[in-house]
Image (cartoon, rainbow, N blue to C red; front, side, top):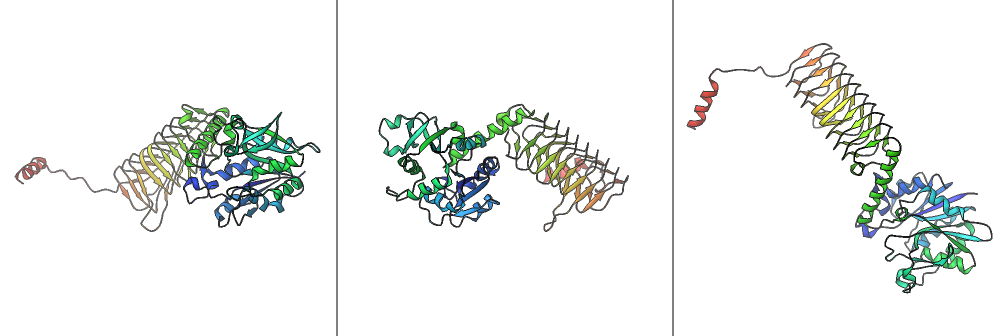
Length: 437
């Protein structure tokens, strides 16, 4: 039977105080919407996203999944009904785009409770640590009769700790019919999706509750709630890495992205940040206070401490990138070393080469970027400036303090600096001159 999920993502998220649509605010480097889509993929045959007018960025984030536009924001039930043509004839689940922490297992459970002639709908429920103003689920024995909003709840109903978490599953025909019956006789004149419980119950359909942990059901409506959701995601990612054989000395200080790939026996020291697109091979060590994004680190490599690896960089096996070294679009060959105070941008460095402290590649001339090519077994002395485009052949040696502006042949010794001049007694004369002035 065809299973379809409708993700409601038309809200502006005014409490976020942002020009960015709420569902595009990032968690672990990816938009909230992306997290929810990823959780839906193993469960549903089709994923449909409902956006508001003039939200092309949300539609782009939803791609390649179909998008339906709610042209006039008239409430969540109206948004769901805008996608009615996409329901098909199977089972439909409706969820909110600002619930990015839901898991595939919980979403699958929503459909498992439907049964012909008895349960007509399943409803996602949770028990918040502080129920506050959440809508309460009224019912018993695992079934709901209605959802009562906090403002309309009696004192007794407010003592209920089982709350609406914003997920509804039913057969397509039932879902379509019930949505059409929802009215807008309320203070805001909106069509509320939660009223579907009352409509279904009035038809005599049983509504089963599927209870999920609070940490899965935390919605995001403010920057504070976004920060809490980030903490939940990071905890999940850290536990997954530890379970996969990664050593984290102080895991609570390490920040991962959703696509961070850490092989077994990787060691991550405290206060490391992984941006998007990082892959670390087995046995590598990422030392404290390093920042990596868009890069690949080979087996047994050592990064940091205090290193920055920027997008497009590849560090091969057993290579070393030391403290206060920055790589950008640079390939550091196997066993090569850049251990101190160095910037290497748009550079290729061969195996076993050594880059001395304070070396920089001058890759930008004010208009264009240029590349530097350094061969294998090259020794670059300290405080060298390599002015791109330039190449250094295998086995060459660059003297400390040199400015290299032209190609260096393989095996050559290159020195590009002014000759040192010593003036005997000059120090004393200089001091006397300064004293007189």
